[in-house]
Amino acid sequence: MPDPTQVVALLKAQQIHHVRLYDTDQAMLRALANTGIRVIVSVPNDQLLGIGQSNATAANWVSRNILAHVPATNISAIAVGSEVLTTLPNAAPVLVSAMNFIHSALVAANLDSHIKVSTPHSSSIILDSFPPSQAFFNRTWDPVMVPLLKFLQSTGSFLMLNVYPYYDYMQANGAIPLDYALFRPLLPTKEAVDPNTLLHYTNVFDAVVDAAYFAMSYLNFTNVPITVTESGWPSKGDSSEPDATMDNANTYNSNLIRHILNNTGTPKHPGIAVSTYIYELYNEDLRPGPISEKNWGLFDANGVPVYILHLTGSGTVLANDTTNQTYCVAREGADKKMLQAALDWACGPGKVDCSPLLQGQPCYEPDTVVAHASYAFDAYYHRMAMGDGTCNFNGVATITTTDPSHASCIFPGSGGRNGTFVNGTALAPSFNSTTSGCSPRFFQSEYFYVHSVLFGVVLWTAVYL
Image (cartoon, rainbow, N blue to C red; front, side, top):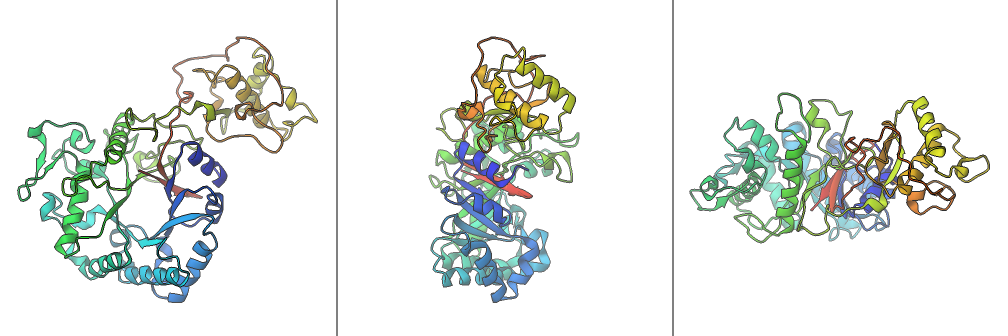
């Protein structure tokens, strides 16, 4: 994963104002300082038992991970554990205690009005979710859910819910139409109708959120709002996951963003937007499990969008072309001989002024083929107006939104004046306008996560709508 400063540079370049972190990585929190970005931090599941059994442990956690960073880092909420009831049931008896202890520490620091405490739940804790009006939480968890909802109500917090129509669709064995999962328009005769309320549902997302509202009302809680702390769609899968495709991921996330930004609300609560975080900021190529588990991200590790979201008419969120903030650098792991050949070409036939790379000049250090090639590639890329295929160099170059400038070496993409370009019109060798990974177009975004950092260190991050 990129280091924290690179992550924050991407968040700022994409105008992402809310992130959810799956831990409290100290370097990440420092990097987020003075950015104004609103941050949800998390108590990892492996720390839950200790915090839930000791008020002092919880206070120490808050001191180290919250008080040490606010107000410079804009921490807005603490997620205590993640999907505890379904993934770590042995810790369920101390979940509410952990939340109370964390909250008490915030009260003592006079931060409870600014930082809310909650815990994310899998939507699978909701049974009989359709029709929504008949939904209820798994009764096994009533001894936890009732005091938990009382805590959320009394502290003015919200229910955190992870909503994945992709998994609902996959597990329905054909009972849920793909269009219904993807927010695609449905004929009125294809809409799902709740026979008890006569409310019409046009997508799985709304039905799950309303099922959670009805499940809370079943326990006599009607004024606890819901924030969706994870939602998304994988862009790639193995043969058993034929609908994990780039097109479907693009369709789902684009339609989700549009649905939220239009303040559509849900059939039960029309006009009240559901704050939502998209899982996730980066793909996780080393994550174990099925191929789809590695491919939920909106960006690759170089900050290149996996796909460009279809957001016409939805304002600037995740929509605008940000080519002025892109750079061309050496691809990680590229063959050194091929890099040297591409560097030689750029500084020769490519007519890039490589004098800043000479000994004693600003970009000589570090004296490596990777660093020198990155400068030359970026110089050529911007000299050619970031045109299609001008960041290729036989596959050893890649586009990033992270400024590669360092010390006194300012890259051309940052407006650097280490040297000047020589007029010319040469194209990079083996130029192919259809080569993947070299599109210079990026988009701006309101939200993301990284896994430990979602949009991890490992960072996971989520983007927020």
